[in-house]
Length: 210
Image 1 (spheres, rainbow, N blue to C red):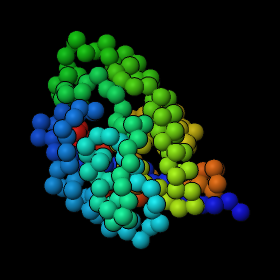
Image 2 (tube, rainbow, N blue to C red):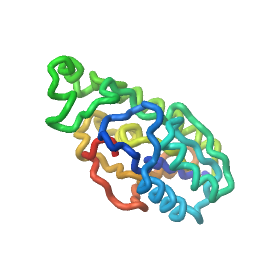
Image 3 (cartoon, one colour):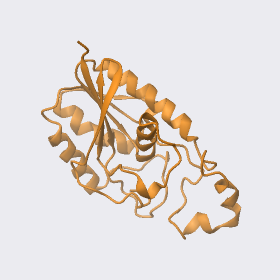
Image 4 (cartoon, rainbow, N blue to C red):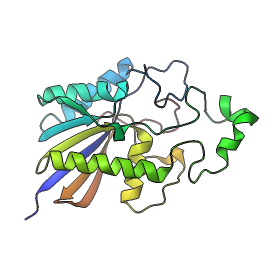
């Protein structure tokens, strides 16, 4: 019989972002007080799970989200660069609809192809690197559970890839709240089920910088 292994993809908690910019891969963006509480809530929710491997994106907010979960299971937080946020040419800008960078003609050429997308890392590349991180975590926790802390767009993109859906999408419809879990259930190497849960509650996917 195949062994069951679960790889949980955890989106980081809320970030301290008073200027409401798209921070992307910029350094220095830590969890807000609420984000720290969300991380602790998730740690409590998975306290009884058979987690044997915790790995996170190198970005500060992901490392801080992973820390209480790893501590509860007496594990170190490993780092996998493939879990990092998507590259985006609008980093450091305000990009809410009708606001900031999107209203400036100099930025319009970046918006010509939403299907790739033209403003940042191609969706297919995001999906492929996330798959690499997922299968590394699966192997590390074989027969148990692994937890990978990443970011909204990478998690949502790889989920759509695994569900054989087109990768371009409306960001307002992403099912990936702050501190949510997208859990991939494997029998051996075969993905048999995807389970989504929100131990820290639902948040609005349209909020910039959340």
